[in-house]
Amino acid sequence: MNEVSKTPNNAASTSGQSENLSSKDIMTLEHLYGAHNYHPLPIVFDRAEGAKVWDPEGRVYIDMLAVNQGHCHPKIRDALVEQAQKLTLSSRAFYNSVFGRFAKKVTEMFGYDMVLPMNTGAEAVETAIKLARKWAYMRKGVPEGKALILSASDNFHGRTIGVISMSTDPESRRDFGPFLEGVGPDAAKIGHPIR
Image (tube, rainbow, N blue to C red; front, top):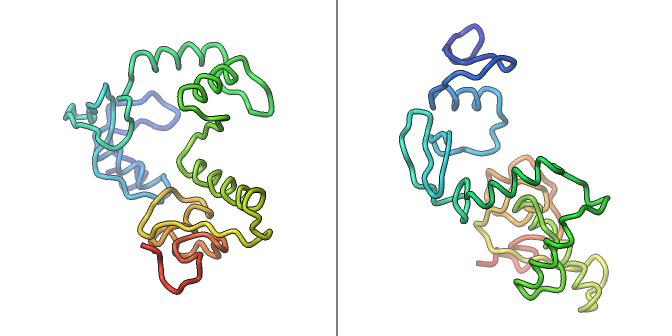
């Protein structure tokens, strides 16, 4: 490490061309400049194909955590590149020429009435909380403001306020309260977490 700049000795500046960095250098950069909201395993993913992942030193690992379709699946990669060259991103404030067809295919495939795609697991859980509350008020006659969202203890779904309201992990909750009322393993006010 270069003590003056706090960057690895062989690290390129952020404005320059990237050089080959070691796993240790990459982890040091992330530790110095990235928020510490996760504690990753000490493995750096540099490239991947299928279930195999390589670190910058060329060591190979089997990724059993992340993607169920495999990394860099040719059909998915090609569709992504093709779409990104045509239209990278559009807000749901507008219609686009692809979403309707996607929604039709997904709902027919799984037998659903409608679909609301999400970008992250935390976003999906937040939306599920909203849908469950709305269903309770509109379909079950629960009085407004009285819906309870129960969750199992010892879970992890992300870092949003609604999601950590469902958690019992002290590290995820410390210094982030107050949490959502009526949400979590003790939302039923029975005096102990539901297991």
